[in-house]
Length: 272
Image 1 (tube, rainbow, N blue to C red):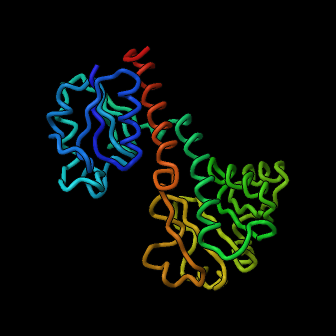
Image 2: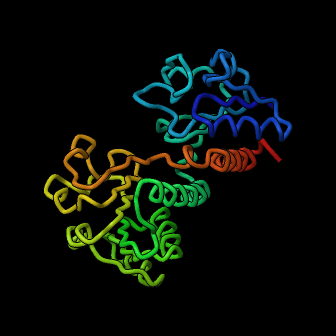
Image 3: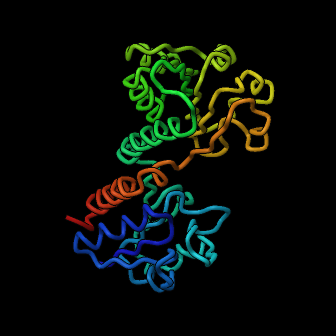
């Protein structure tokens, strides 16, 4: 069975290697080390693995390739039976599965994101996390794992969440939890602020609540908690850190993608 691994960053190189080590016939294209023709590689593949996200501005997400490929053309290159697996795929594609919607992938990826966020906070600040006042906006998969790790470091963690259920879960884990009506108060008292909410939650009026000696780490995907054009107005040092596992732990992140694609293949009768 032939597997095509197309585009992406170092995570995808790890994915391709793992397929080869597992005995699959695996070819890659649109990477720094491979100049294979994308469409030739795809056309006779049983499964084509695309990056996370699969596209940027309508073009294949292939940052290390010198070729621009429109992602819409990729889905016409298969045999008709080719299964396309990737992240943030266009909706309503036949023979496809978007792993960025799968809970098994999201839960494992949240662990790597939280670990990378801790590493980033330590590198970008001048103080220890022990005793630091840390705010986490959002208490989903990433927020919950991040709060647990920060608590183990001895940080004073406050969770800011809209839903009362999320605040209750945080309180059960012995964390402080407040609603968004207290966001400005939390911002003024925090040394480090993590945002995990993938929507605009801080407007220009809220940006003045950030302290100049604080650190704001954006973990959410676009449109981010702060509009990119407004980030210069934020008093805090700001760091964009979406897609963190591919930067801080690409081997482990690649393993998670590989395991998830393999689970998809088993569910569809394409692997044992």
